[in-house]
Length: 80
Image 1: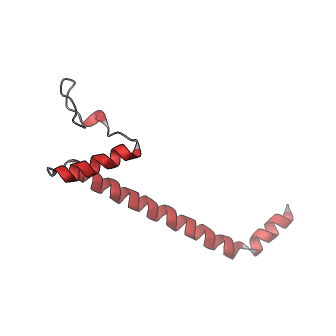
Image 2: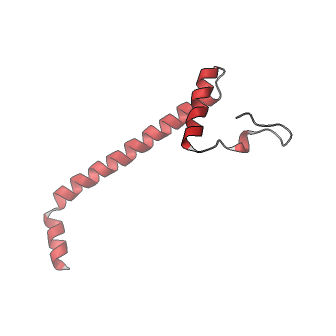
Image 3: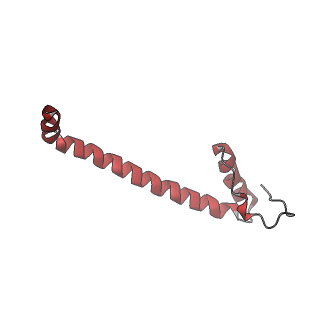
C-alpha cells in the first residue's frame, strides 16, 4: 500500500493536470447546457412558429417532455 502512495505523490503533477481538464470540461459543459436550456425555454414562449417548433423539436428528440405545471387549470388543455 505504501508503494501506491509513494507513486501517487511522485506522479501527482500529471494527475493534477488530468483532474484540472476534467473539472474544466464539467463546468463548461454545465454552463453550455444551462445556456441552451435557457435559450430553448425562451423560444418555447415565442410568437414565431419557427422558434417554437425548434424548441419543441429539441424536447421531443431528447425524449423529455415539458413540465405540465405550466398548464392553467384542469379544464384547459396544454398545447404541446
